[in-house]
Length: 204
Image (cartoon, rainbow, N blue to C red):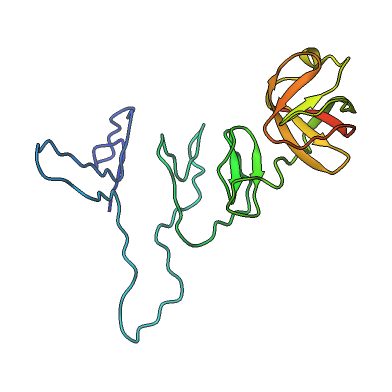
């Protein structure tokens, strides 16, 4: 059991503490030969036994973190990936992703991708409730992964990352480059000649 307090055990206050560790896991090696294959900061084994009963089991249980004045994190990571090889993730709170979020495929930065197969070709690129329409029209040209509309002013109205909806066939993608006033480069090839489009600016 780890216990941290800023007194001397007799009730005398010792002042401020910059960092207090109830539990600290540290690993160190400087050996020039040999290798540590797997290092575990904390390893929790499953319960074993024969015939015993167990109602609930928690690998890690954290109470509500609410005492601090400024920030209260149950788990805080400065970096590194988090991988769950099995099981589900459930929350009654909300989730925030400052990078990309992908379901079934690789993420694209600042976008939501939902894929229905293992081809890494998102069938739905965006959830666009928090957007503002900045442009619309009908394509008068056809190019691979392009939106072409002569006489437009894309350099004024558009930017990389804006959502582009093909309102003729209900497909979506996003802008990867503003080529000029008449041409946009897109992440996906969703337009043919004479199809209608709408361009949306996503809000931060």
